[in-house]
Image (tube, rainbow, N blue to C red; front, side, top):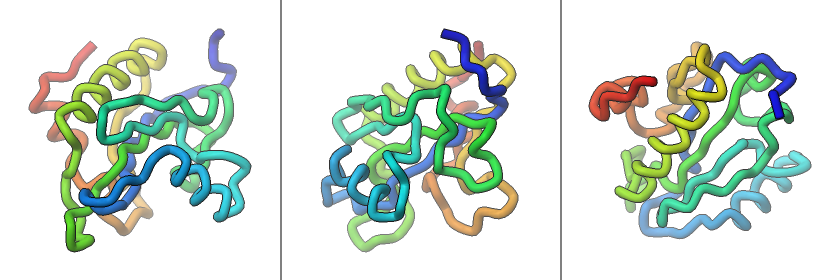
Length: 144
């Protein structure tokens, strides 16, 4: 089904949880519902084992990037903080593989969409997703 929303942005996030603590999909859902969302605000969630969980349908506006939700897809990976709670790229090899595969799939569906990290949006003042998305895409030679 073609998405009726015009998607021109794919935003990568982290859950901002410590690498030594699990944050399963159920915990993410409880957290987002506690914040008043009707469901998880991201369209996809990738746990440490590399499992990709579809969350919000792509046809539905997300709740992940203020001012950009109407025209973006949100992806979040479990982690993003070291054991002391400092921002760190904690992606497992399985998460990196799954994220790359998901981004390729989304880039085919939305060829005009720019892929960036949450921190790359102009108003964001945090390190989420705790790695430089554009640099990583260059490292893995990402292109369609």
